[in-house]
Image (cartoon, rainbow, N blue to C red):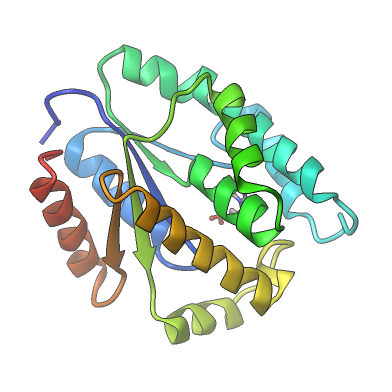
Length: 204
Ligand code: TMP
């Protein structure tokens, strides 16, 4: 069911909350371009390697923010802006809001400065809707136990708590833009909850 006017929707949340699966299902449902940050372009994939590499052990928070913003600048230029201009909706697995949460709240950079940097990087192309997927802590912990942790995943509980608190604060600050969905139940249940929430906002 394609939406009537193109909309840019971002799926956001902590590690291992099921975002990628839900982004793919939503994109399919509404006939949107499915994409991701970081690594949604060939250049972005190279930048993502740096960001995730555990061997990168002294990356400054500002450098991290700039690399994520460079990924985003390329992604908006190459994927998001052309899709919207062609009348296609976009569903993105993460967006600028991950930079506000991870580099701003998580790395404790000034959130307003990270926002400003990203307004420049994106030419102000910003998600219309952000969906915060809130998974149960024990589900996330079990998923994390089952995999090799990358540089972000290995950053520690306090960092991840700041990120999660950051997402919640961002959602509370802009209730018209954010939808919070409990990532509990089956994949189909969560997808239905997302679709219902978008429907009640008049997006679907
Ligand atoms: P994921 O693609 O597996 O969700 O992992 C992306 C990781 O990169 C995740 O730990 C969040 C982090 N990240 C940032 O720190 N800043 C950003 O701007 C983006 C898009 C992701």
